[in-house]
Length: 344
Image 1 (cartoon, helix red, strand yellow):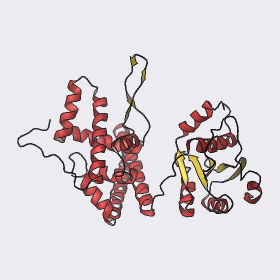
Image 2: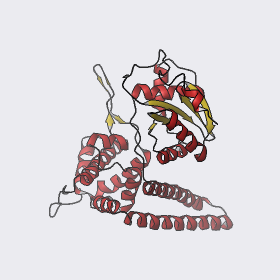
Image 3: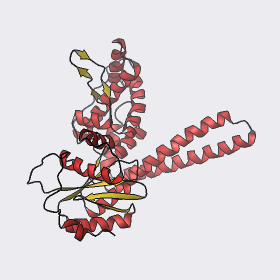
Image 4: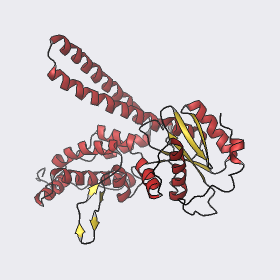
């Protein structure tokens, strides 16, 4: 097990410096602890020393408890790893330990900018610590138990829905009657599981007044159904607390410039949460047809020569900004459709 008592003494007062570290305020009480996460283990950089521990909840709780005792002001910094970081995030939530979850590309670019070309687990942990000291990432808001449950249910629903699409495609290509029966049975199981998950999500949202109010508010917008509202509640709990630019960037629908000198490049979207963008895409498809304001906006972009996907992304951005404003401001009123106006 990690011997933090011996680990801290020499380096606690002065964090090791190198030619790749940015000067930070001497008054900053935070000590950034880098964690390089894999499925089996986590490699830590604690004040310049490297240690390894299993990526298991019980071990992580013990480590964080000892870390809190011997390193006042410690803040964990780790990369998003597609799910392997969840035991650490849950342990941090239980121990009330501040933790920042950052994009792996940001850390890698930081390493390259610092002239670090080698890539090992130990070196990655040091780079993550250095990234924390240089960039001072904001600690992640700790989700409640209900929020984690809703997110888990929505993720499982998306997984089963993806399997359902695959099985329906396989049913069309099945060559024998026996195989068709097997695939049909799998489809029925998936449909039943989706139905069960939907009921559980509905019960969970109904049990929390704030979620029920947000769901009812979002579904007032033509094109946004309960499925989209549930996905946003699960994957975008920050909705209603951000400004227009922040919510668009968080969803990955904010356009970024690609200009240099006299050359003006095409703007494009980058980053954000794919799960949110997927939910918004389906809602935008519907809104571009049945929402009188967004449909007019979509058609005006097409008339100006915009590609359909570009116009649809613009609708997605308008839609999430609208939903964010509606939840932030209870008095925000939707524009009424003029009498006799068509869908477009």
